[in-house]
Length: 451
Image (cartoon, rainbow, N blue to C red):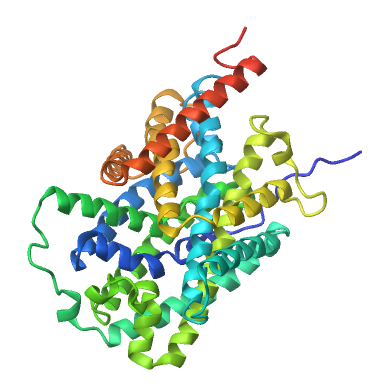
């Protein structure tokens, strides 16, 4: 008798936390520090890191509660569907999440790959924009090939990649702390804290970058069906990774601008603007050390892309296995039990997305995610606690419902203070997704067209 292939719970707390932190400590802080400083015109932009941390911590508690309660593959697909009714509104919410994921997962992965190509310019100064895009696409395909294996091997590989990432960050922190100049880090421009609309708009932009950099603490929820003892390990992985990465980011950013003047970092065309950590190490230790650091950052970026693609490749699979998405995505490798078709699809579309510029990729990713996933999920915890007592909650967020409300307010603030054009793209994408759902539901005679 043939046995149906299923996912294997092969990752423990160490591997799950490593996968989270690999996604969080990617190219993000190494390329966004100049953008965060430019958003507010000075070191007061550190407020964006703090506000981003508050939002991430509150949102992390949402993911921890939902991930422990529904520890299967797919993350938000399961949470939204169950919260809003698996036979009613939840069908639409779950479909919209998958719709958003298929559209934005390539943006997330491509943003890291484009950042990888940008940092490569330090080692390859003659790299043209076209060559950079080809390099970024090749990185996406390389990650896809590395992930084409069983989950136990991936867990071990994640830990190896994670150790090198921590060593890289440790070097940056040591260099910054031992060469830090307070006067340079606190060199505020006149009117830095003038509470005008410009201040709050700049803070919103800085927070968007910070949220992008913190992103990844929810990665474990997407492959929750492959985590051992998920009721304990998923919340722990989420909260440990947020606390550790927040400390790293705050110290790293503050010490870097205590060495590299922030005005230099926001000036287009300078090394500090294009590769701030390479400029930071070059200033302290010379060209050879900067070359070594650039290689380590490229390793860190590749490791992050590894973790991101791992999580996203499981989302369409979960929906397809549930009969709510295209059947091809439900395929598992016949021997190694991983979603091979979904992985290939995400890898190839990420390579194609590398033809967009980095700023567009980051803004589109964050804004569309908030519209199509995080706003609905902020309310999902409240809906489940009120109307779904049948769903057991092994972990309950602290200070309920305050974290949900703070996260919701944070997402709305980011949307209201950033590019209207991309917010409009997100709303159009949402409307197209709603239209696609109703077209499909009518053909299949599903809610709300049940006969």
